[in-house]
Image (tube, rainbow, N blue to C red):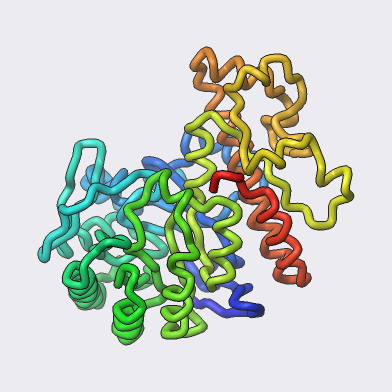
Length: 399
Protein backbone atom coordinates (compact mmCIF):
# COMPACT_ATOMS: atom_id res chain seq x y z
CA UNK A 1 0.00 0.00 0.00
CA UNK A 2 1.17 3.49 -0.86
CA UNK A 3 -0.17 6.88 0.21
CA UNK A 4 0.56 10.25 -1.31
CA UNK A 5 -0.56 13.70 -0.21
CA UNK A 6 -1.59 15.77 -3.22
CA UNK A 7 -2.44 19.01 -1.46
CA UNK A 8 -2.32 20.46 2.07
CA UNK A 9 -4.04 23.62 3.26
CA UNK A 10 -4.47 24.68 6.88
CA UNK A 11 -3.89 21.12 8.02
CA UNK A 12 -6.43 19.57 5.61
CA UNK A 13 -4.90 16.84 3.44
CA UNK A 14 -6.11 15.74 0.02
CA UNK A 15 -4.53 12.38 -0.66
CA UNK A 16 -4.60 9.10 -2.55
CA UNK A 17 -4.16 5.51 -1.36
CA UNK A 18 -2.83 3.25 -4.13
CA UNK A 19 -1.50 -0.28 -4.62
CA UNK A 20 -4.04 -1.56 -2.12
CA UNK A 21 -5.22 -5.15 -1.96
CA UNK A 22 -3.75 -8.54 -2.75
CA UNK A 23 -3.38 -7.59 -6.40
CA UNK A 24 -2.40 -3.99 -5.70
CA UNK A 25 -5.17 -2.79 -8.00
CA UNK A 26 -7.28 -0.67 -5.63
CA UNK A 27 -7.00 3.08 -5.11
CA UNK A 28 -8.97 5.38 -2.80
CA UNK A 29 -9.10 9.17 -2.57
CA UNK A 30 -8.88 10.78 0.86
CA UNK A 31 -10.34 12.21 3.05
CA UNK A 32 -12.61 9.19 2.93
CA UNK A 33 -15.05 7.30 5.09
CA UNK A 34 -15.15 3.53 5.11
CA UNK A 35 -18.37 1.57 4.68
CA UNK A 36 -19.63 0.67 8.15
CA UNK A 37 -20.68 -2.96 8.45
CA UNK A 38 -22.19 -5.27 11.06
CA UNK A 39 -21.38 -8.95 10.84
CA UNK A 40 -19.57 -8.31 7.56
CA UNK A 41 -22.30 -6.47 5.63
CA UNK A 42 -23.98 -3.09 5.54
CA UNK A 43 -26.61 -2.96 8.32
CA UNK A 44 -30.25 -3.46 7.22
CA UNK A 45 -29.23 -3.75 3.54
CA UNK A 46 -28.71 -6.68 1.19
CA UNK A 47 -25.73 -6.39 -1.14
CA UNK A 48 -27.90 -5.72 -4.21
CA UNK A 49 -29.60 -2.82 -2.40
CA UNK A 50 -26.24 -1.47 -1.25
CA UNK A 51 -25.00 -1.43 -4.85
CA UNK A 52 -27.83 0.92 -5.81
CA UNK A 53 -26.48 3.60 -3.45
CA UNK A 54 -24.23 6.17 -5.12
CA UNK A 55 -20.60 6.71 -4.09
CA UNK A 56 -20.39 3.74 -1.73
CA UNK A 57 -16.81 3.71 -0.37
CA UNK A 58 -14.60 1.01 -1.89
CA UNK A 59 -13.37 0.01 1.58
CA UNK A 60 -15.53 -1.92 4.06
CA UNK A 61 -14.89 -1.50 7.77
CA UNK A 62 -15.14 -4.84 9.60
CA UNK A 63 -14.28 -5.39 13.25
CA UNK A 64 -13.36 -8.37 15.35
CA UNK A 65 -16.03 -7.79 18.00
CA UNK A 66 -18.68 -8.94 15.50
CA UNK A 67 -16.64 -11.54 13.61
CA UNK A 68 -13.99 -13.12 15.85
CA UNK A 69 -16.35 -15.82 17.15
CA UNK A 70 -16.81 -17.06 13.58
CA UNK A 71 -13.12 -17.11 12.65
CA UNK A 72 -12.95 -20.92 12.56
CA UNK A 73 -15.51 -21.01 9.75
CA UNK A 74 -13.55 -18.36 7.84
CA UNK A 75 -10.37 -20.39 8.38
CA UNK A 76 -12.00 -23.45 6.84
CA UNK A 77 -13.39 -21.33 4.00
CA UNK A 78 -9.76 -20.36 3.13
CA UNK A 79 -10.63 -17.38 0.90
CA UNK A 80 -10.69 -14.53 3.40
CA UNK A 81 -13.40 -12.50 5.11
CA UNK A 82 -14.31 -10.41 2.05
CA UNK A 83 -15.23 -13.46 -0.01
CA UNK A 84 -16.83 -15.15 3.00
CA UNK A 85 -19.22 -12.19 3.37
CA UNK A 86 -19.81 -11.73 -0.37
CA UNK A 87 -17.93 -8.41 -0.23
CA UNK A 88 -15.14 -9.37 -2.64
CA UNK A 89 -15.46 -6.08 -4.53
CA UNK A 90 -14.42 -4.15 -1.42
CA UNK A 91 -11.09 -3.62 0.26
CA UNK A 92 -11.36 -4.55 3.94
CA UNK A 93 -10.14 -2.60 6.97
CA UNK A 94 -10.18 -4.82 10.07
CA UNK A 95 -10.33 -3.12 13.49
CA UNK A 96 -10.79 -4.45 17.02
CA UNK A 97 -13.95 -2.69 18.12
CA UNK A 98 -17.29 -1.54 16.73
CA UNK A 99 -17.24 2.29 16.74
CA UNK A 100 -21.03 2.34 17.27
CA UNK A 101 -20.92 0.23 20.45
CA UNK A 102 -19.50 1.35 23.79
CA UNK A 103 -16.60 -0.78 25.01
CA UNK A 104 -16.68 -1.67 28.75
CA UNK A 105 -13.67 -0.45 30.71
CA UNK A 106 -11.23 -2.38 32.88
CA UNK A 107 -10.76 -5.72 31.13
CA UNK A 108 -7.47 -5.44 29.22
CA UNK A 109 -4.41 -7.35 30.42
CA UNK A 110 -0.69 -7.55 29.69
CA UNK A 111 -1.22 -10.76 27.74
CA UNK A 112 -4.09 -9.48 25.60
CA UNK A 113 -7.07 -7.25 24.96
CA UNK A 114 -10.76 -7.84 25.60
CA UNK A 115 -13.28 -7.35 22.81
CA UNK A 116 -17.02 -7.64 23.34
CA UNK A 117 -19.04 -9.96 21.15
CA UNK A 118 -22.70 -10.98 21.35
CA UNK A 119 -21.54 -13.78 23.62
CA UNK A 120 -19.80 -11.38 25.99
CA UNK A 121 -16.12 -10.79 26.74
CA UNK A 122 -13.72 -12.38 24.26
CA UNK A 123 -10.01 -12.44 25.09
CA UNK A 124 -7.52 -11.77 22.31
CA UNK A 125 -3.80 -12.36 22.74
CA UNK A 126 -1.32 -11.81 19.91
CA UNK A 127 -1.28 -15.45 18.81
CA UNK A 128 -5.05 -15.67 18.51
CA UNK A 129 -5.18 -12.21 16.91
CA UNK A 130 -2.74 -13.32 14.21
CA UNK A 131 -4.61 -16.56 13.59
CA UNK A 132 -7.76 -14.55 12.94
CA UNK A 133 -5.96 -12.10 10.65
CA UNK A 134 -4.50 -14.98 8.63
CA UNK A 135 -8.01 -16.37 8.21
CA UNK A 136 -9.56 -12.99 7.36
CA UNK A 137 -6.73 -11.76 5.08
CA UNK A 138 -7.83 -8.10 5.25
CA UNK A 139 -6.30 -5.41 3.07
CA UNK A 140 -5.53 -3.30 6.14
CA UNK A 141 -5.16 -4.67 9.65
CA UNK A 142 -5.36 -2.50 12.76
CA UNK A 143 -2.81 -3.75 15.30
CA UNK A 144 -3.90 -5.10 18.67
CA UNK A 145 -3.93 -2.34 21.29
CA UNK A 146 -4.99 -1.26 24.76
CA UNK A 147 -7.12 1.85 24.24
CA UNK A 148 -8.84 1.86 27.62
CA UNK A 149 -8.02 5.47 28.49
CA UNK A 150 -9.96 8.71 28.70
CA UNK A 151 -9.74 12.25 30.03
CA UNK A 152 -9.55 11.06 33.65
CA UNK A 153 -6.94 8.32 33.21
CA UNK A 154 -3.88 8.46 35.45
CA UNK A 155 -0.36 8.65 34.03
CA UNK A 156 0.21 5.10 35.28
CA UNK A 157 -2.75 3.88 33.19
CA UNK A 158 -1.52 5.85 30.13
CA UNK A 159 1.95 4.34 30.37
CA UNK A 160 0.53 0.86 30.79
CA UNK A 161 -1.68 1.29 27.71
CA UNK A 162 1.25 2.63 25.66
CA UNK A 163 3.68 -0.10 26.70
CA UNK A 164 1.18 -2.89 26.07
CA UNK A 165 0.25 -1.46 22.68
CA UNK A 166 3.88 -1.22 21.58
CA UNK A 167 4.64 -4.72 22.87
CA UNK A 168 1.65 -6.10 20.95
CA UNK A 169 2.88 -4.31 17.82
CA UNK A 170 6.39 -5.74 18.15
CA UNK A 171 5.02 -9.27 18.50
CA UNK A 172 2.68 -8.77 15.54
CA UNK A 173 5.51 -7.47 13.35
CA UNK A 174 7.67 -10.48 14.20
CA UNK A 175 4.91 -12.98 13.44
CA UNK A 176 3.87 -11.11 10.31
CA UNK A 177 7.30 -11.63 8.75
CA UNK A 178 6.77 -15.39 8.66
CA UNK A 179 3.13 -15.25 7.52
CA UNK A 180 2.73 -15.76 3.78
CA UNK A 181 -0.97 -14.89 3.95
CA UNK A 182 -0.34 -11.42 5.42
CA UNK A 183 2.55 -10.24 3.25
CA UNK A 184 0.25 -7.94 1.27
CA UNK A 185 -1.83 -6.85 4.25
CA UNK A 186 -1.01 -3.30 5.36
CA UNK A 187 -0.57 -2.81 9.11
CA UNK A 188 -1.73 0.30 10.97
CA UNK A 189 -0.05 1.06 14.29
CA UNK A 190 -2.14 2.51 17.12
CA UNK A 191 -1.06 5.67 18.94
CA UNK A 192 -1.99 5.87 22.63
CA UNK A 193 -1.33 8.38 25.40
CA UNK A 194 -4.81 9.54 26.37
CA UNK A 195 -5.09 13.30 26.85
CA UNK A 196 -1.37 13.82 27.47
CA UNK A 197 0.59 15.62 24.74
CA UNK A 198 3.87 14.25 26.08
CA UNK A 199 2.73 10.63 26.12
CA UNK A 200 1.02 10.93 22.73
CA UNK A 201 4.23 12.23 21.17
CA UNK A 202 6.23 9.46 22.79
CA UNK A 203 3.78 6.85 21.51
CA UNK A 204 3.87 8.40 18.03
CA UNK A 205 7.68 8.45 17.87
CA UNK A 206 7.89 4.82 19.01
CA UNK A 207 5.19 3.66 16.58
CA UNK A 208 6.88 5.42 13.65
CA UNK A 209 10.08 3.43 14.28
CA UNK A 210 8.09 0.20 13.81
CA UNK A 211 7.69 0.95 10.10
CA UNK A 212 3.90 0.57 9.96
CA UNK A 213 1.79 1.52 6.93
CA UNK A 214 -0.54 3.96 8.68
CA UNK A 215 -1.61 5.27 12.07
CA UNK A 216 -4.71 5.07 14.26
CA UNK A 217 -5.40 7.64 16.96
CA UNK A 218 -7.19 5.79 19.77
CA UNK A 219 -7.63 6.05 23.53
CA UNK A 220 -9.73 9.24 23.65
CA UNK A 221 -13.02 7.47 24.45
CA UNK A 222 -14.69 4.06 24.60
CA UNK A 223 -16.73 4.28 21.37
CA UNK A 224 -20.52 4.19 21.11
CA UNK A 225 -23.26 6.73 20.24
CA UNK A 226 -22.08 9.14 22.95
CA UNK A 227 -18.96 9.93 20.91
CA UNK A 228 -21.23 11.88 18.56
CA UNK A 229 -20.94 14.60 21.21
CA UNK A 230 -17.19 14.17 21.73
CA UNK A 231 -15.61 17.62 21.93
CA UNK A 232 -12.66 17.60 19.54
CA UNK A 233 -11.54 20.99 20.86
CA UNK A 234 -10.35 19.12 23.98
CA UNK A 235 -7.79 17.25 21.90
CA UNK A 236 -6.96 19.78 19.17
CA UNK A 237 -3.51 20.59 20.55
CA UNK A 238 -2.86 16.93 21.36
CA UNK A 239 -3.69 15.86 17.81
CA UNK A 240 -1.69 18.68 16.24
CA UNK A 241 1.40 17.86 18.29
CA UNK A 242 0.96 14.17 17.55
CA UNK A 243 0.58 14.74 13.80
CA UNK A 244 3.88 16.64 13.81
CA UNK A 245 5.60 13.40 14.81
CA UNK A 246 4.11 11.38 11.95
CA UNK A 247 5.46 11.05 8.39
CA UNK A 248 3.45 12.85 5.73
CA UNK A 249 3.28 9.85 3.41
CA UNK A 250 1.20 7.59 5.66
CA UNK A 251 -2.54 7.89 6.35
CA UNK A 252 -4.07 8.73 9.74
CA UNK A 253 -7.34 7.24 10.98
CA UNK A 254 -9.57 7.93 13.97
CA UNK A 255 -12.79 6.16 14.93
CA UNK A 256 -15.74 8.14 16.24
CA UNK A 257 -19.44 8.73 15.62
CA UNK A 258 -18.48 11.39 13.10
CA UNK A 259 -21.18 14.06 13.00
CA UNK A 260 -20.75 16.43 10.02
CA UNK A 261 -19.25 19.29 12.04
CA UNK A 262 -16.86 16.87 13.75
CA UNK A 263 -15.81 15.50 10.35
CA UNK A 264 -14.81 18.99 9.24
CA UNK A 265 -12.85 19.52 12.46
CA UNK A 266 -11.18 16.12 12.10
CA UNK A 267 -10.06 16.89 8.55
CA UNK A 268 -8.60 20.20 9.73
CA UNK A 269 -6.57 18.20 12.27
CA UNK A 270 -5.07 16.12 9.45
CA UNK A 271 -7.16 12.95 9.71
CA UNK A 272 -7.48 11.09 6.39
CA UNK A 273 -9.73 8.11 7.14
CA UNK A 274 -13.04 8.02 9.00
CA UNK A 275 -15.66 5.40 9.79
CA UNK A 276 -19.34 5.78 8.82
CA UNK A 277 -20.98 4.53 12.01
CA UNK A 278 -22.79 7.87 12.37
CA UNK A 279 -25.40 7.19 9.62
CA UNK A 280 -26.13 3.85 11.29
CA UNK A 281 -26.55 5.47 14.73
CA UNK A 282 -28.90 8.05 13.20
CA UNK A 283 -30.90 5.28 11.51
CA UNK A 284 -31.24 3.33 14.77
CA UNK A 285 -32.90 6.30 16.45
CA UNK A 286 -35.43 6.62 13.61
CA UNK A 287 -33.91 9.76 12.14
CA UNK A 288 -32.91 10.95 8.68
CA UNK A 289 -30.00 13.21 7.71
CA UNK A 290 -31.08 16.55 6.24
CA UNK A 291 -28.00 18.78 6.50
CA UNK A 292 -26.94 20.82 3.47
CA UNK A 293 -23.47 20.64 1.93
CA UNK A 294 -23.81 22.17 -1.53
CA UNK A 295 -21.84 25.41 -1.26
CA UNK A 296 -22.71 26.39 -4.84
CA UNK A 297 -26.47 26.12 -4.37
CA UNK A 298 -28.77 29.10 -4.76
CA UNK A 299 -30.28 30.69 -1.61
CA UNK A 300 -33.58 28.95 -2.42
CA UNK A 301 -31.87 25.56 -2.71
CA UNK A 302 -29.90 26.11 0.48
CA UNK A 303 -33.09 26.96 2.33
CA UNK A 304 -34.67 23.72 1.09
CA UNK A 305 -37.42 22.56 3.39
CA UNK A 306 -36.07 24.46 6.38
CA UNK A 307 -35.29 21.40 8.47
CA UNK A 308 -31.56 22.03 8.36
CA UNK A 309 -32.20 24.93 10.73
CA UNK A 310 -33.08 22.32 13.37
CA UNK A 311 -29.78 20.44 13.14
CA UNK A 312 -28.29 17.66 11.05
CA UNK A 313 -31.20 15.20 11.34
CA UNK A 314 -34.94 14.96 11.78
CA UNK A 315 -36.90 12.39 13.79
CA UNK A 316 -39.26 10.74 11.32
CA UNK A 317 -41.23 9.09 14.15
CA UNK A 318 -42.48 12.51 15.27
CA UNK A 319 -46.23 12.97 14.85
CA UNK A 320 -45.71 16.17 12.84
CA UNK A 321 -44.69 13.99 9.88
CA UNK A 322 -47.92 11.97 9.88
CA UNK A 323 -49.36 14.07 7.05
CA UNK A 324 -46.09 15.27 5.47
CA UNK A 325 -46.17 13.88 1.93
CA UNK A 326 -42.85 15.28 0.78
CA UNK A 327 -39.65 13.22 0.43
CA UNK A 328 -37.35 12.71 3.39
CA UNK A 329 -35.07 15.37 1.87
CA UNK A 330 -36.06 17.59 -1.02
CA UNK A 331 -33.69 17.17 -3.98
CA UNK A 332 -32.11 13.94 -2.72
CA UNK A 333 -31.65 11.33 -5.46
CA UNK A 334 -31.57 8.24 -3.24
CA UNK A 335 -34.08 5.42 -3.70
CA UNK A 336 -35.91 6.23 -0.45
CA UNK A 337 -36.43 9.90 -1.28
CA UNK A 338 -37.39 9.22 -4.89
CA UNK A 339 -40.08 6.69 -3.99
CA UNK A 340 -41.40 7.30 -0.47
CA UNK A 341 -42.73 10.12 1.71
CA UNK A 342 -42.00 11.24 5.24
CA UNK A 343 -45.54 10.25 6.12
CA UNK A 344 -44.95 6.66 4.99
CA UNK A 345 -41.65 6.36 6.87
CA UNK A 346 -43.41 7.80 9.94
CA UNK A 347 -46.03 5.06 9.59
CA UNK A 348 -43.35 2.36 9.26
CA UNK A 349 -41.53 3.58 12.35
CA UNK A 350 -44.64 3.80 14.49
CA UNK A 351 -45.75 0.30 13.49
CA UNK A 352 -42.22 -1.11 14.04
CA UNK A 353 -41.86 -2.28 10.45
CA UNK A 354 -38.37 -3.41 9.40
CA UNK A 355 -38.66 -1.48 6.14
CA UNK A 356 -38.28 1.78 8.09
CA UNK A 357 -34.67 0.93 8.93
CA UNK A 358 -33.98 -0.16 5.36
CA UNK A 359 -35.22 3.11 3.84
CA UNK A 360 -33.51 5.27 6.46
CA UNK A 361 -30.23 3.38 6.05
CA UNK A 362 -30.36 3.83 2.27
CA UNK A 363 -30.90 7.56 2.62
CA UNK A 364 -28.45 8.16 5.47
CA UNK A 365 -25.62 6.26 3.79
CA UNK A 366 -26.31 7.99 0.47
CA UNK A 367 -26.31 11.44 2.08
CA UNK A 368 -23.17 10.82 4.13
CA UNK A 369 -21.20 9.40 1.21
CA UNK A 370 -22.21 12.36 -0.97
CA UNK A 371 -21.03 14.64 1.85
CA UNK A 372 -17.54 13.12 1.76
CA UNK A 373 -17.46 13.47 -2.03
CA UNK A 374 -18.28 17.16 -1.60
CA UNK A 375 -15.50 17.49 0.98
CA UNK A 376 -12.93 16.17 -1.50
CA UNK A 377 -14.31 18.47 -4.19
CA UNK A 378 -14.02 21.45 -1.84
CA UNK A 379 -10.38 20.64 -1.11
CA UNK A 380 -9.71 20.49 -4.83
CA UNK A 381 -11.45 23.73 -5.76
CA UNK A 382 -10.57 25.72 -2.64
CA UNK A 383 -14.08 25.99 -1.17
CA UNK A 384 -13.42 23.99 2.02
CA UNK A 385 -13.78 27.05 4.26
CA UNK A 386 -17.16 27.87 2.71
CA UNK A 387 -18.30 24.28 3.19
CA UNK A 388 -17.12 24.30 6.78
CA UNK A 389 -19.02 27.54 7.43
CA UNK A 390 -22.19 26.04 5.94
CA UNK A 391 -21.88 22.91 8.09
CA UNK A 392 -21.13 24.81 11.30
CA UNK A 393 -24.22 27.00 10.81
CA UNK A 394 -26.37 23.87 10.98
CA UNK A 395 -24.85 22.57 14.20
CA UNK A 396 -27.52 21.67 16.80
CA UNK A 397 -28.05 24.34 19.43
CA UNK A 398 -27.55 21.93 22.34
CA UNK A 399 -24.19 20.57 21.14
